[in-house]
Image (cartoon, rainbow, N blue to C red):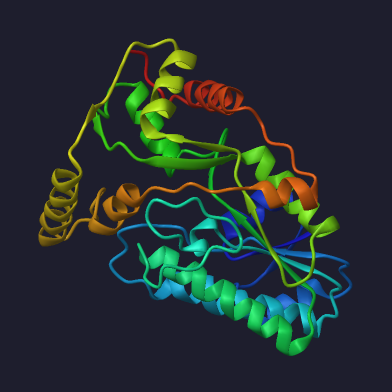
Length: 301
């Protein structure tokens, strides 16, 4: 197994797992093709996933330019198949709808992250068509489970240890981290070139998710729900206040906009065509809580 590493720390961590490491950046087509040469399969899982960034240049470089560079490198190295990690956010579903691979895009973006992943997926597919490179896209929803303390998991952990007392009534969609790995492997084996596959195992209201988390963790807690208008105003005020002090805001307008929109994803295609089977929500939450406690991220109440 070979992997590309950009930093010394990443290279050391990969080498410790017995991986052959090649150094380079995701947008460096020459470094990528040199590393891919002789491979039967390649995965492009590199990317920047963040909200509230003051300058999206690095995100665009990794998520757009990097996606195209990976396709061109795979073609140059004569790799039979490339699997590209996209995002369910690229579906761009209209408010209040359940999205699948064929949902019409709403025509505007909730965040710079969503924009970068959408443009990157489109550019990668276009490059693959131009070069006749076999490319399969995998579109995970929010990936959660042991090892993941960001995204929805961040809110769940903060709620369970009492730091998060207010939240928004919205829809959330998650995929267990183990299911996400399985989905990539199945897409490599069974996916159709030029197609994309949504990976999503949990679709529920935020209040139900937090209630399930409290039950699994054995705590008694319920969040107060913010009115939607107040949440929007709060996100704007927090962002402006932190920016004025030269600090990175923990909450910003695009984050709140994404939360208020919510996401409901339909992963039927991955089940039907790839043979995916998803972990039960309670098991995903249980493993997440156990890991967070073991890591000291979930403080006793």
